[in-house]
Length: 180
Image 1 (cartoon, rainbow, N blue to C red):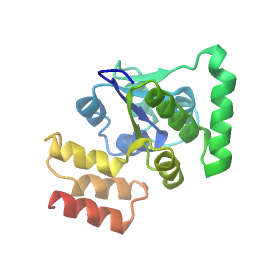
Image 2: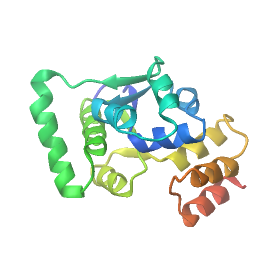
Image 3: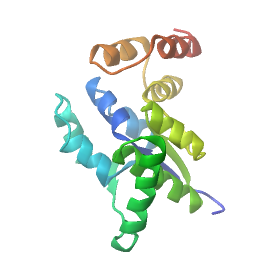
Image 4: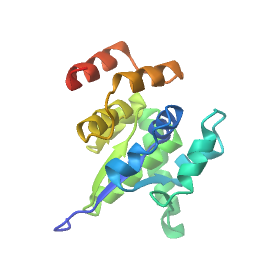
């Protein structure tokens, strides 16, 4: 392990899409400085998405704080094999699996990896792999604690109104945690 681990934040598509829907992608560089995605997540968000917020995501990908990590050619087969194993074991998609494998590999190198992920099965897979995770709602809590936003309730309601799934239980827990 490195004496001073580097913190690396890796995002799955869900949190990026959710934050784009409410116009708050700006929270990512404010909270983390830089965010990395796999090429699978970038493709899912930019090419695979048919949603109104794709322009905001395209603009974010043009910024230096959001970058796509490429897999070296000599590692591609092993990387894809690790992803396929996670897909088969946890029933997650390639974007989630790739982000999780990236977090695992960075952690194995001694980096402090944080995976931004909302998908339930993806979160379970990450917890099973002992990878630190944070969802969109948790990110909003962090933003509130850091003073980057004044209130969470309107953002949670905007997420829900835009079609982003948030359970009543999650919303109640977040509001209770932040005193709203």
